[in-house]
Length: 243
Image (cartoon, rainbow, N blue to C red; front, side, top):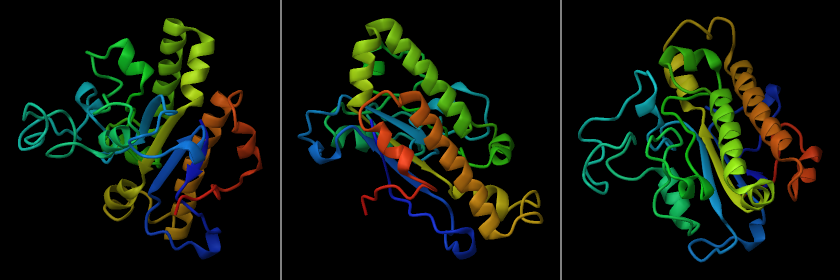
């Protein structure tokens, strides 16, 4: 598993980011990845907000819910699934594009099976953000919360299939992170909690620090896997870009 990012982060003096919406792409061997026909990708995991959440908020106490019509009307079965969509969300499209499976289940889904874990799950939470204060406002899974779930995920698959196979799965996995718009829409521009203390460049820097910490934690957890030494040379999220 390796990190690629669509973000090219400017310095705080030249921040032009309207909202830090990160889409961080992690792949063991990007050159080998071709949509739909790719055979090297074994698992897909996603982190983030409602763009990615496939139903985790159904299993937590939160005001951010989509478990009622018309959500899900075009999904298989025509019922709400916890996705903020009439059908699939980005997580589902990602896992289908990379030929792993048709939909990506939520990690907190009580019906989750071992095979679901082995081929990847979704850790995202609708309404989630980089700013921990915003996460508290909405009672959603913060980015650190999602990373904690990922640690539990690793432990579960290790217990089920052993260290060697777990390492193989993770080294051939792809992950995505999409997040950031809620910090501005729900917190910065809608409440007096942050705006009196941060101008937009400073608040963006706060979000960038959170995203950077996410990357660092992931690297620390997976640093024994192939290609991870690459990211010890990267700084301030100026990672290889897919754009």
